Length: 145
Image 1 (cartoon, rainbow, N blue to C red):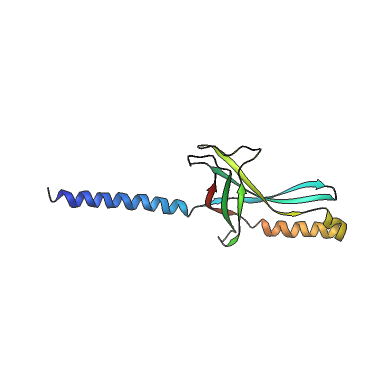
Image 2: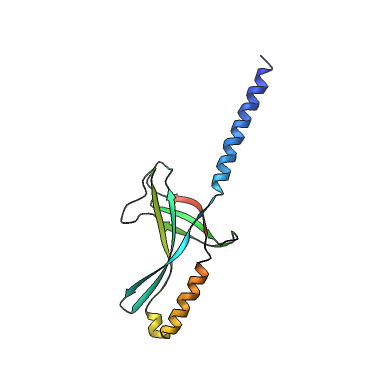
């Protein structure tokens, strides 16, 4: 009977370490995300919106309306952080389902065209796109319910 106890304890310890190892590995997982350039218009002309998006699977027991992320470049260097909105069209991401979470990181509006001209506006749009296109990964920090 005494020989059985250490084996049982050892089995429990191994099981606990496996569970903790899986949770730690999951917490450090980076998900693919990226920036899209979406054009629009307003009263002063063309608008360029740089929208960061991330597709998530809701494994929590509650509907998610936001996700806090650190966004990173190709070498896992941190570029910034933000809260993405997952409540698209007033619909949260329900438990067990998938959904897109987005945030406009930057907006270059028509006022720049009036101030600097079309050539300079296009240069600003392309420079920002090059910079923000380096975003490849998002590390999820937490959820908003």
